[in-house]
View 1 (tube, rainbow, N blue to C red):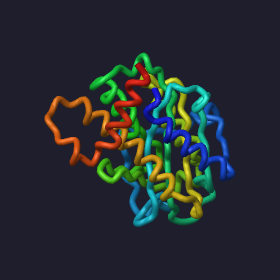
View 2 (view 1 turned 60 degrees about the horizontal axis):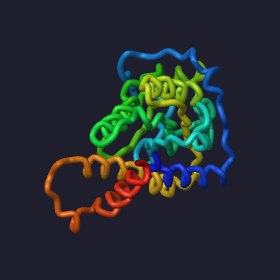
View 3 (view 1 turned 120 degrees about the horizontal axis):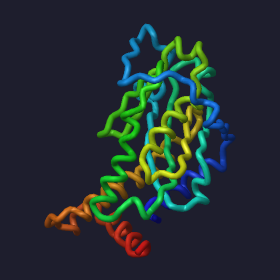
Length: 234
């Protein structure tokens, strides 16, 4: 499954330039969860991740290459939740190792990718309120004062995401990257991960049985690349 390889390589290149903290996922299984997204009022908020005009990037990419995602990992560039003192830029990138044989092809492949991606809507850690925009692909969060005092960490948040992603039988391993470093090139990371979303959208576009004028479609270049990669995977 080579569709997103360029995204993995781009993220890997950026990671090589920064100091990255790693969390052991198995140590972060004890944080409480809610049945639905809680409301954290402003008076109960310690700070916001990606609030206002600050970067609030979220994306996902999939691969069957184990050298890209060898095991479950939670990585952080910047300060952890207990170290942040005010509103901060934010990025969360999920890189998944999947079983290509179970992903399906055509419309099934597209629906499987979207189902895996939508796992984030089922994650509700106590004291961590996600604010997700499906249209702009922004993912911000409010972090509660009590949660910070109790020791909430990106290790806990990452563990929730890993467990939820792996409820899908196609997912073998998950590498989660969180970024809060104010000096990080969020624009470069966003450009890389926009390609991921374009690939998924193009995949759906190709599979739909509709008449279209490819010469005037904004997705033509990406569609051509996706079709070529799909042929290579056969």
